[in-house]
Structures are given as structure tokens and as C-alpha cells.
Length: 334
Image (cartoon, rainbow, N blue to C red; front, side, top):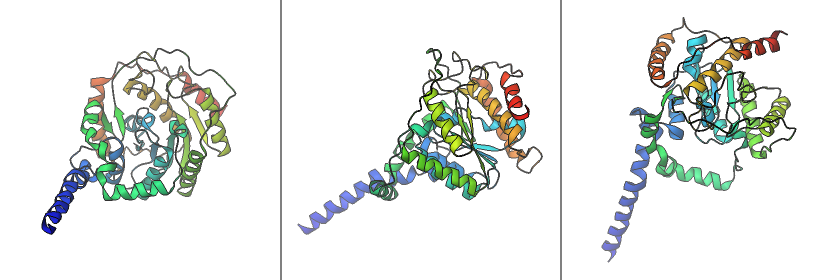
């Protein structure tokens, strides 16, 4: 009887290992990265850890709006500035805080761009329940990385370049004007403000300039949110760039520049957003062009691959001097 009971317990432990522990080990970011299968939430930290130390000057944080709106390879091609998009799918701002802490251990960015959409996504307090969940995740990695199996499929839909998702899908937004002027302000949850202030402190501690920006997105932004972020930026003496109020000047065409009816930009929309942000960084942040540095070879190889991939998905774009260039110059020089 005792032997039978021991066999049952042993069999259960073996089943548990097969169903939870072993698959969890295989789906850990380190393993997924080794076999180039990482993507989504599980791949962000592993990709940060393998990025060469002290080579990134601009870091972009946020949720999916960040890695759909900013292209590091375009910034490199235009100005020779190195950047990395460390956005996390569906991120809460506390996750951005954790990612930034990790980044500062390996990099010395001069600028941190925070895409603001997740300021309005509820972030629960860091309570006992969360700490217990973290411990369970450490014991059973499968529970934490259960969605990592989707990564190869995600990579088939869009290819990552320094965190930017190259996606040429087109599904038009047909809802018309969405940024109606208003004096109302959207509520920002107290816990979100707490983590935001933590990001501000981290940037000041590491002498990185923090800039807030809102990617063009009719599905996520309105004037109430614009007002809330503007006040938050003023309270913390930060620059706030809302690309939604500039969408027409950026020549965002909602018939062709979004991949999912106004939620995220596609490659063409991201090129327009990056052109504006790059121009602003070039005019205001005194970054160093690295075209002649020892890391240039690696970045140029990535750029070549990026351009090959981009040609397969992008529309024809004829870039001209835009109204926003004059706007930025007028703001800076009067």
C-alpha cells in the first residue's frame, strides 16, 4: 500500500515536471533568444541583456504604441543616433519602470522617450498578492512565459529591428476627426503617477532627458488625455510632444498609415512619426552621430537588412520639407 502511494506521488511529481517545469524552462527568454524565437512580452528583457553595453543613446518605452511608432534604424540612417525600443505589449507603466531599471544597468542613454498610452492603463498597487505571484512565477516559469509560444508566429507577422515592429498591414481608420479641443482632463490613476514619478527619478539620477510623446492613434487618444499629460509634463518640467494634434502636419493618412483601423501605425505611419521625433531630437538633444564609431559596422548591417525588409512592405513615400519642421524651428528660435 505504501509503495503504491509512493508511486502515485512520484508519478504526479513527474507529470508536474513534464507539464509545468520543463516547458517553462524551454520558454524562458534566454532559451527563446538563443534560438531566435523570442518576441512579445517574454522577449523584451532578454533582447535588452544581449544588446552591446553602453551603445544606446536613445531609449523608447511604452506599450505596443511605442514599437509601432518609432524606428531606430531610420534614426540611425538619418542622423547616426543609436536607439532601442523597449516597449512591452500591453504594458502597465510599472513594467516600463522595471525595464528602465534594467536598461540603466547596461546602457547610458542620454534621452528616454516615454510613449504615454499606458499612463491610462490601470496599474494595481504593489501588494502582497503581486509578490506571491512573482514567487510562483519564479518556481514555475511556464505560468509567466505561457504566451511565449506565440513568438514565432508574431515574428512571421512583423520583424523586429532594435525593438521596432516592421509591419506593412493596411486597415484604414474611417472615424474622422478625433482631437476635439476640450478643457476636460482624463484621470490618471494614483499608482500610475507613482510609477511615473519613479521613471522621472530614474532618468534624473542617470542624467537622461525624459521626453513624453503620444503616438498618433485615434483609438487611444483624445483631448482629455492630451490635457492630462500636458499638466503632468508641466508639473515635472518635461517636454510633451503630442503627435495626434500634429497628425495632419506629419501628413498621417488614416486611409493608408494604420494597420488596424487607427489603433497602431504601420511602417509608413511610423516613418512619418520617426521623422518628426528624429528631427526634434537632432535640434534639441545634442546627441552624438556614431557613423564613424566602432559600432557603425553592426548598425549598417542591420540597416541594410531593415531596408530590404521595408521595401517589401512599404508604400512609395516622397518626403518633403514638412510644416512641422518650420513649427519646431519657430518654437526653438522664434
